[in-house]
Structure formats: C-alpha cells, structure tokens
Length: 373
Ligand code: SOE
Image (cartoon, rainbow, N blue to C red; front, top):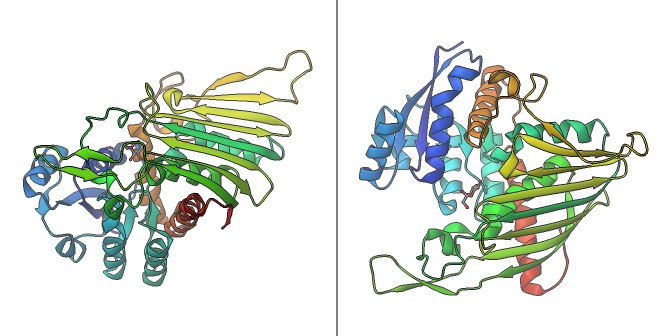
C-alpha cells in the first residue's frame, strides 16, 4: 500500500475553501492507511490562487487545469470550479487515471453528467459528487431509520431551501446569474441538494411539475457602468411523484427575505415522521406512531452520541459539530473508498440521475406540463 496520496484541487473559490478544510483535517479523524498530501492548487486567477493556496497549505500552484490533471505526481483531482467546467475537467482527469471528486451539481445538464459517469466507469477510477449534506450525521441517521422501516411507507417528502441574498436589487451580477456558466440558478445550486437527499432518503423521482422564476432580470456588473442579464433562475419550485408512490414538494429560492441558508426537510410516513433543519444540524425530530397512545409527540434527538453516524470520530457525547465537518466526512469516506477499493456514493451516476430530475423540472416549467423522468 502506498504511503501517501496526492491531491490537486481545481478552483480556489468558496467551495474550494470548504474542500480544502476537508483535506486539511481528514487525517486527524479518519484512520487512513496513507497520508493525504495537499500537493497542488489551480485557479485561472494566479493571485487569488496563490494567496488562497498558501494560506490553506497547498504545496504548489498551477494556472492551467489541463497541466494539473496530467501531472504524474497527482492521484486525486478535486473540482471546485463553476459548473460549466466540471465535465471537461472530470472527463480529462478520469482519462488521465485520476480519482475525481466534483462539486455539485454534477454538470450543466444530464448529457454532460452522463459523459462524466461514462468516462469514470471506463477508466475504473473512484468518483464522487460532493453532495455534502448526505454526510450530516442527522441525515445519515435519518437514512438508517428509514431503511430500518421506522417511518413505514413514505407518503410525503417536503423540502424547502431558502436564501435571501438576491432580494437586494443592488446585489451585483455574478457568474451564478449566467445560465451559460451556472447551468441554472437556485435550482442547480439548492434544489440539486434536496433532489439528491430525496433520492438518498426516499427513492427515485418518476415525474415532476416545475415553476422556474426570475424576479429581477438585470443587475449591475461591479466596477463597470454595464448591467448583466440574469438568465439563471432566482427561484424554482416543483411538485414530484416518486416511483414508490410518495409525493414530493420542493422549493429553492434566493428571495426568502430573512432566511440565509435555511434547509428544512419533512418526511411523513405511515408509521412515523422525521424533520430536519440545517440551522439545527445536530438535531433530528422524530415522531413514532408506535409510541404509547397518549404519550406520542415529536421528540428531539440530539445527534452527539457515539452510536450516531460519524460522531465517534469527534468529541465526547454532547459536543456538537458544524457544517465544515460534512466536508471532512465526505473526503474521509472518499479516501477510505480508494484505500479499500470500494464503491462510494453519491458517484457520477448519482450526479447524472439527479441532473435528469433537474433538467425535467426546467423542461416542465417551460412547457407548463408534468414531465416523466
Ligand atoms: C451557495 O448558494 C451555497 O454555498 C451552495 O453552493 C452550497 O452548495 C450550499 O450548501 C450553501 O449555499
């Protein structure tokens, strides 16, 4: 077994920082058979990349992702760039024999995501889409409880994901407003998470009916007199039918005044219910119809016990963890999958299946019809 594994990260923006935190901390908490080395960081802006990379502890710098993915001293490529470059980088990295972890959503559309899944499959490399919320301990516990049948047959999956940074008309035009770079807006950024969680917790979605909205259609470009046209959605809501009969209700918006990063899931089943709120990520609300009549009610499980998923790696019972830990968990699980040559999920084919749903919602909104997936 090798002594070290060398990581190259592409993209020094916000999510690159979150991933860097994961690479930095993972060896402290995971019993890895090799040492992860933060070998190289790459960004098209060399100044921001060097500043970022130096502070985070990356050892060398590249300004071209093509050079990066072909470096012989790199084993893993971590893609944290805007969405329009995920596919070319992931495909090239897989062809160069690198294991690949890629920020969500997988790509601009299902066609691109499929190319990524096929390239990774053909190259036989480990691949993962960084849907980090699967690795919140409360969500992993919800998965376990649902798999054990604690909820019985699931009737409803309701997901709202609220942010409010675009309600300010003076917020400038950024790449996330440009559908040529982002693919979509709130939809691909936030519904992507909840669709992944819906697939993880409840099952495949069979059909959808969507409503995509842009509330402010042009914004000032910072430092110029020009305005940019907003072509990516400010908000997208949709109804869904799961193939197992459950009913789904999804809202993602950047216009939820007062809500900064509010993600709430409600899952109602024939035997019980679960409610998760990201603002209280160490907790899970559970209602069981099996409780004694007269004593039934929602209980709040504090997810800090050793038997809870991921918690043993951290602190003694009662000590809470945060958002950044989800990146350490996903990177740790990814490295363990490489070490043990095991399948890791969500992989590129999950990214593709999630993207099929996202694409169908946009098609439905445009055609004003339900769309089968
Ligand atoms: C920005 O909207 C963002 O950082 C997303 O890109 C993340 O995936 C989400 O977790 C929080 O919001």
